[in-house]
Image 1 (tube, rainbow, N blue to C red):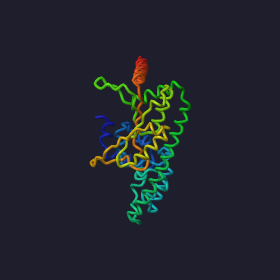
Image 2: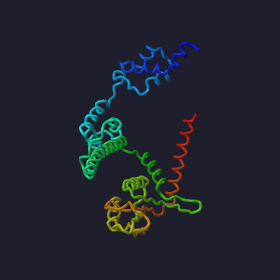
Image 3: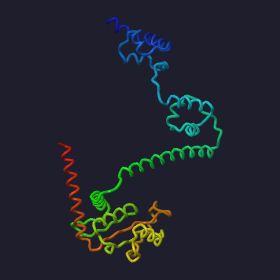
Length: 290
């Protein structure tokens, strides 16, 4: 057995020495050199449980927040109060102050819940502002659409949301149904681009029986500019008592079905254009593989 092996075997003696050096403020590298321990696993075991000296820690952007959170905790603040004060997450606060004593409860549960809601509302406002800015920036990037761009958008839009012809059910007619007024406006702009005359349009509101069908018809007529005679009888959806509906409230206007009369040729053009898009996209994928 070599002298080095004998030294490693006397683990408890080495541990006492390593801990003493650690408490003097030495780094792991200094302890390694002092005791001539060049096995990192053994070195870490020798000082296990002993915190590193402050001077060896890397500066952290959250050090000031951590220190402030500990200060507020010692003043008796709860996690919710600290979150409201500092704007950081409760999970981070928990990690920073978990070794400190819990403050005595000074508020009722209702008061604590109100504070928590206030903190969460502040977080939601920040998220809403971030969401608004991201959407505005993305909208600005789009800019004006060329005719070709609108054509391609419309084809993809129809193939995602419009009715399709099936070999077992021939439906070569153009019908588009959606509840999003933006989708409906884009679809109509695309039809205008294709030269579809407005007298070919037929509209039907599809809405739940508990909603105001007349108000929905007025809403969709305003969105589309449809004449009253173009609006057919609304399709009323009957209530299923086992279903919990979420599309309720004043902003629920049902769906609008836009049907184009005498549109078999238009449908075939749409399907052909979609096949062209798929073929072009597939070619790009194949090109990127090579």
